[in-house]
Each structure stands twice: as structure tokens, then as C-alpha cells.
Image (cartoon, rainbow, N blue to C red; front, side, top):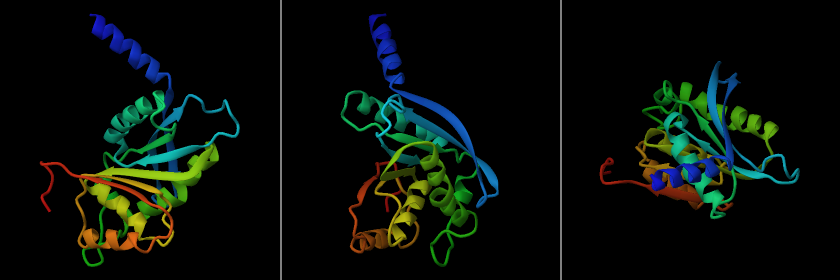
Length: 201
């Protein structure tokens, strides 16, 4: 009973450290509304000069909560900086959002529009509402982890850090990404992980 009470108090105190809420943004690129989840630090609004890094979480319908929980916990103990976390709900669209052309292995059609939505609509929308710093991150899992790598194909990638969880890499991605690191002049932080149950290649 004491453990349950202690856990409840700890969870409540950490939950107070950030505010989570749902939002919806209309995309001209996608010609549809997209649901997003937001985690805003509790310090937001207390210091007009304070800015926050932003983390875009693909597969936000199931990745947002575990990532938000881990990062909020780290920020609570001052092990991580406070940040604004934006989860994109892709429960019904992830395959269309993250498809690629069989010949070029690049986004096409719906996935090209989703790519433009993130950089041209979602990030500007967040920047207008919240004081974000220049440091931007993106995270994804399996096919969305592959998709986030396409941002590294740009000469000046809009994201500074990439969290690639168990990616299902498109053809040539295993060669293209390392070669891109040699051509990008600004510092890039890249985390790539797989597990025993993942695709061997």
C-alpha cells in the first residue's frame, strides 16, 4: 500500500511538471485536419525570454505518451532540458504518410505532402504559438523511423537531432545516411537503435 501511495504522489508531482493537451491543425498540403498531442513545460509563460527545444514525435498516437513520460521525468530531475513535445497522430495514415517510390526510394504523393506538412506547416504553427529554440528534434518507429531520415537528404536539414527506433530502412538508406553526414556542415545528433526482434538487415 505504501508503494502505491508513493508511486501516486510521484506520478502526480511529475504530471504537474508539464501540461498535455490535444490540438488539431488544418493542412493545405494534405487537404485535411491532423490531430496532434502537445506537452508544454509548466514553466511556459513564466519567463518571457525562455525558449524550448521542440521534439516532433511521429506515430504520436502510441509513441507520444512513453516519450513524453521519459522526457518529463528526466526534466523533473534536471537531467534533461524542458522541451515542447509534439506528437502527430498517424493511426490511420502512417503507411500513406511514410510510403516511398519504388524506383527513387524517395517520398511521393501523400508521403511527399506529409513531408512538406511537417516542415512547412506544423513547425511554423508551433513557432507561432510557443517560444521554441532553434534546436529541433524528430523521433519515429519502424517505417516512421525510416521516413524521418528523408529530412537528412536536404542540404540544410530542419532538424538537429534524430531518434530512429527499430527502423525499416528503404533501399539505399543504409548507404545514403552515412554519406549525408559527411556533407552536412552543422552538427547533427543521431540515435539509431534496434532490438533482437527487429528485422535482421
